Image (cartoon, rainbow, N blue to C red; front, top):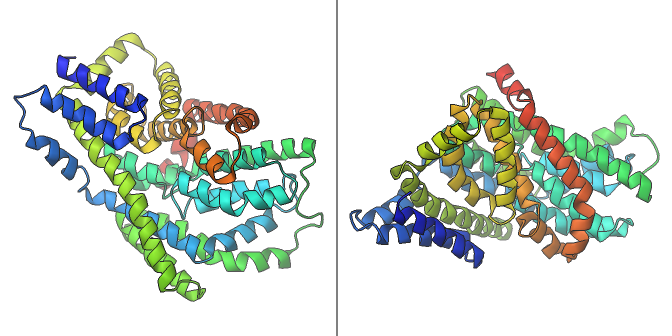
Amino acid sequence: MNTPVIAMVAALLILLFMKVPVFASVLGSSAVYFILNPNINPAVFGQQAITGTESVTLLAIPFFVCAGVLMNYTGVTKRIMDFCAVVTGRMFGGLSQVNILLSTLMGGLSGSALADAAMESKMLVPEMERHGISKAFSTVVTAASSMITPLIPPGIGLILYGCIANVSIGKLFIAGFGPGVLLCITMMFMVSRISRKRGYMPLRQEKMTSRMFWRSFRPAVLPLCLPIIIIGGVRLGIFTATEAGSVAIVYAAVLGIWYRELGAKEFARSLKETLTTTSSIMLIVAAASTFSWILTKERIPQQFTEWLISVIDNKWIFLVAVDIFLIFVGMFVEGNASMIVLVPLFAPTATAYGIDPIHFAMVFIFANAIGAFTPPMGTLMFVTCGVTECKTKDFIKEAVPFYILLFGCLLILTFIPVCSTGLVNLIY
């Protein structure tokens, strides 16, 4: 690497260490490169930042964010939560099980792990405490279960990865179901075992009757159809993954009007929340596109691939090394930011090893999510603890079994590709 590149990387690490916002850190380090490279027109700096956000595919982000926010404001989340409570009512852990299943079902609606974590921290954690579940355990379950959300379509991480690595977003949407369901089932089983030992009792003792099931399912059936509409529409070629976002907005708005819970005030608040959430994501995209342009110009991905292949001659060792590296990076850097910077480096290398792009995408996104759950700077940990006022040390202590579970699931996804690619191969 030449001097401008070394200076850029050093500036990025220093700015991140000083806790400068990620988008400002990336832009600042990119500016250092242009300053030390007088042969490159400075206008390229601004051009790359702007053009990086002009991809039509990226329109899916504000669309799905808006759809998820509308769902929250129109009572859809409450209807799905009531359905989850009936389905999991006899399982030890009570509302802890509701928390996990709700995150799985809401993954098809919100698409954002942080949004899901913040929502469930406000809605469920106080209720869980009232049912005798400790605040620390409630907070950890909420943070861990929200990791399912970016895996279930239409996760924002799936859209970003598809745009950066030029992988079919429709296939990523379908592939996400395997890891998402795996994490949901294993997490519910573990929470049941822990809850049984601690005496966290079920919500009810009587068996679920068909009348009880249909009474809770009927209000939730229309919201639960949204993921089916999205996947079915994309697979049948009725609309693209981007256009599916606009379909989701219309569907959410129609549900809100149907339930008579979407007024002008709620709609305005939804648009405001969509604007702030999307802006934060797109600032990172703009900054990272300039950074990625520099990496491409300097042939860093190619050099990185050649060096890595010369050091590691086995694709499985490479995948494990990527897992460890991404978890470490995720401890300090927000997931979307690290994805935009690191995918251009790792995706070509994975292809050179002969790894299926869909398989690698799932491993990458899941490892990234584990980093967000891990101290010292894990964003999921801070969001949930901030809302519930749980102490960080209590969170970390309660999270130990969940770390073991998450690492185990990551190894399954890493070494058994069919978990990610099986459904994609079946449908496509």
